[in-house]
Image (cartoon, rainbow, N blue to C red):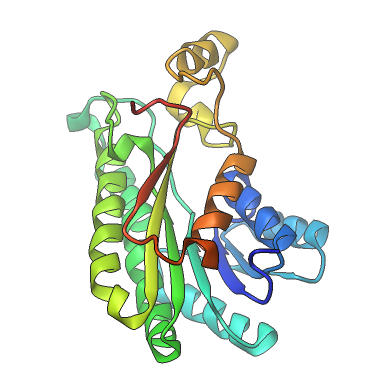
Length: 247
């Protein structure tokens, strides 16, 4: 129960890594506002997790969605202690000069602008409490880029740089900011990166020393630790949850 009494917002919690984080947070005692653009998915996870999860439909590219989630957390659960910026989008492999502006803008809005929006919505509250934890879900692509994923890699490198800069600025206010870097995982985004088929899957697994893809449970475990008081001396870290991929 390392998160007992804590209240969190988790974006993109209706599937994949976000769902794993929501479920682990509830297991560890937290109450969660689950924000997802897929209202049905958010409601499914909330229903399975019980009354400790409140779903809210939201678009992380807008400040208004974060403000609504923060207000819901405070009005129903009585506070707000943690923000997990998990929502993200992928890109199919393609030469960097061929990506159209629409996809580039979507990557920038969801993977980058969302962190800015989240900070605007929650940092004033955290500063007034002199406490808070922010966790950004980045990627191994931000530290060990793969060819033909340039703009996705760049967005995750931005998330890592933002994490470090936020950590330095917010530490005097008692606010910690960290990131996790997942390797390719068993989530709905996987096929966007590698296509379908067992051959493609086996090729990716072969690059991970520990011999398997990451799971939502792996991300939930790492997130719960970094957002808990056990990690009170840890800030500005981007933790590779990658089975040795980036060694």
